[in-house]
Amino acid sequence: MRVVNLSVIVVVAAVLFSCSGQGVTKKSLDTELDSVSYAIGLDMATSLKTGFEEVDQDLLVQGIKNGLSSEEAMIEESAIKSIISAYFTAKQQRDAASAAAENFGEAKKEGEAFIAANKTKKGVQSTASGLQYIVMTEGSGDKPTLQSRVKVHYHGTLTDGTVFDSSVDRGEPSEFGVGQVIKGWTEGLQLMSVGSKFKFFIPQELAYGANPRSGGAIKPFMPLIFEVELLEIK
Image (cartoon, rainbow, N blue to C red; front, side, top):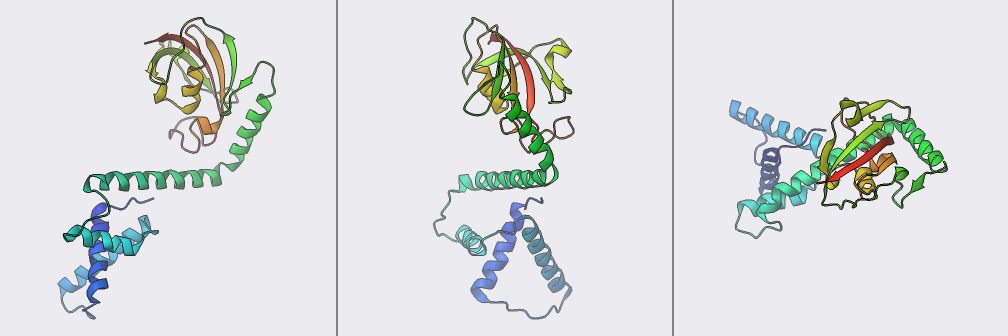
């Protein structure tokens, strides 16, 4: 997806506003400047349609009109960039999820089947969110909260046993905030007391979903398995 540059939106909006308010006044391209001006307008409009085809032209024109005049805008100036950024970030995620669903639909079904079957196995407990876990060792220390920072050892695999990340293999524990990791980890860590070791079976919606890190072993919609030992609350 091509993310529309804000300057493109502004210029095209200005053209639309001009045409809307006064009508098209030129019917021919008499000079080189006429031609290049018209060509740039067409190019910008193409960029806008390519990256933001769902644009509401009336509100686009109204926005540029308010921005150029003394009329009160419907959005505070300080919020403009965050609104644009949030929209295109969400749009990019929706587009990625749609593409992933088309390309990895079978993998999604296989992952869901694994999670459903695993739920019935001896010793596996489940939470309301769908997180599954086995208590391997029950600790006696405090439990972390969402605001805690923890020190852990972990070993992460795919359902076929492929290791994709392991502090155990590296021989060095990791530290991070409980609220800074995938949803399955955030929830699971808060179930553990210091000294505990749990095995987590994390469904894709609590892991990376349709948007795993590119170039790694984790593909869209894959459930993940982690053995996690909570060493310390920092």
